[in-house]
Length: 195
Image 1 (tube, rainbow, N blue to C red):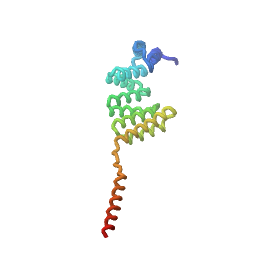
Image 2: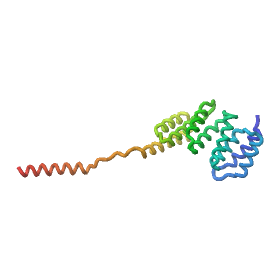
Image 3: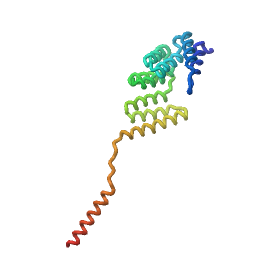
Image 4: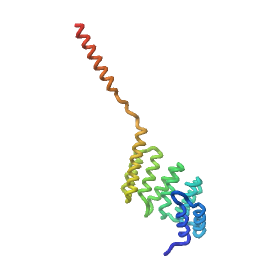
């Protein structure tokens, strides 16, 4: 089975979206064609949802695209990580938790990323201990050295963040002990002289 016309236009659209600049005109045109050929084409809807939420700030329109994917093609795993990340950015943490939990029930899933996103959610709630536990769980589910290093760095970053909230311990001044012992010596030597 070859690529559908919707797949071909989706690939053109995703190829137009680059790190250093995007050909937005080409991207929009290709996405529109892809969705006109297949209204529920999961990759195209996911990309459209990401553009709506992340680039245009139209979160509800973006979320609506993700909901369509989950309703029509729940096996499309990319939707769970993208949707949950954008829900967290929109501070809809309970909704993000539901999306992550549903994503974890799917047969094929990216558990490492879903655990990382759950960790990210707990970090937003300032539950750093739970966040670190989930990052360790994510490390067990990753099979990529680069992602493993990323998770290690996340743990280090959250530990530093946790230290910012820790109460500072007051250090005892060593000089005060020395002064006190000198005063005692002086007072004892004065007493001896008086005798």
